[in-house]
Length: 120
Image 1 (cartoon, helix red, strand yellow):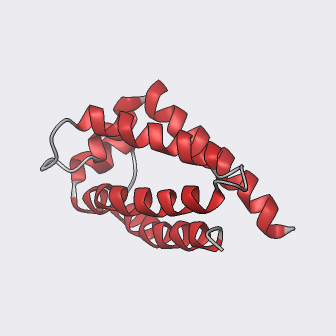
Image 2 (image 1 turned 45 degrees about the vertical axis):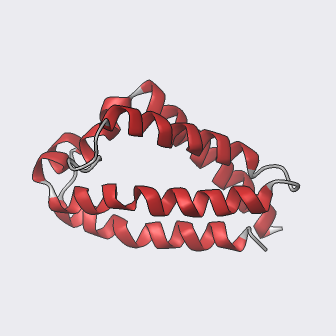
């Protein structure tokens, strides 16, 4: 029962945040590491995959592939979380402290583990 509820929570969260990538892309672009080209395009691409995989995980037939996709997505965007820790301008743009950015890092592992749980 808890696993089924978590699927709905995961789906809603990824779809919600993914849509925000399109409605407010300039919120996310400051945390795209400056060594990556086309930050706005990367925001849109990651948003697309959040919406797509967040919806796909609802369907038991596709849940395993969606969960693996979310794991890959979380790994792919992890450099943005590290960049937020290292970059004062990114922290100012998102109105967060360095400590808050550091505290966010372990949650990425938690989200990966949660997605992995749904590969089974």
